[in-house]
Length: 420
Image 1 (cartoon, rainbow, N blue to C red):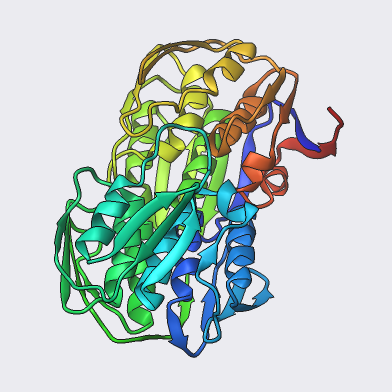
Image 2: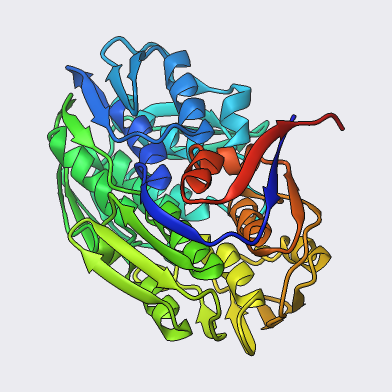
């Protein structure tokens, strides 16, 4: 097994390039299986385990894949299987997008219930509500979701809660339904828009992505296309926070600054300097910042996926900060790890009260989930002494070559093997 070994205390400087968005890629790859003609040439794919996992799953369904550096060509014309029940399906949350994609193209699918990070209860009731509204029969049996329909008919669907997964999944199915489907109270995250743009490149007719209402005008078939995935808002935000915490000046390239506005605003409020320039942002920080209050919200609010890295920054900021986690109920599992390093944090339900300390100290800690892993890396970068981060397979799911990127910025970090 691997771990990250970090000798903290270095400031960061230089330039870093952000990869394609994980949350977009793991939905776009299943969407590609809806093309009954031609091939999908998808660029700016991040080299992460979640992407490799989805690629293995769709290969198992009969797709042909040709992988390049940060790209993949998918030929789904000869797909011959609508049953996804492998270990890869069970281990990642995004495998549920196969339900909407297969239902849209073949009007049936059987997919095992997905796994993913243990950050809270993530029911698929809104997905099911949408599929049933389109005319599908849904059955959950023996840990599998089976959906079937003679045909899918467009309708009006109002989601009870704002859900990225349900928005994308039902949009996938509705793309090949008859008539018009109107989705209300939908998620507006950048990767929702990216999936809609990808589907439109394949011949779909989707309008309104990025607003509260999406209208899907059903088409008869989808064809292959060429497409480039948007930059990863969460990876970019993580490195922005790391620079603010460590001090220094770093230009973060291949980003869409508008997607980062809620993160930039908080860092500026804390005392960091942010400069935007086309497709890059530059973060400059003394490393000595003041605490702020944060409430995670759906886009364009402060993203829940950078709450954990931000909590690390707040532990080393002056004064008291309060984080209200309004999205997931179990996203403070990393707090006990931060406490091992000297953090002063009190958790009450979905609220964390953080009193800044002068210095974190190195310790052996673990990544409890993907974004918690990034939080522990940042903690190691600012701590006094050596920090060892275990369970980094979580980190590898969403951050390509994290140690190499930080090393290029001046961090003292390396990957090492260990046995339990």
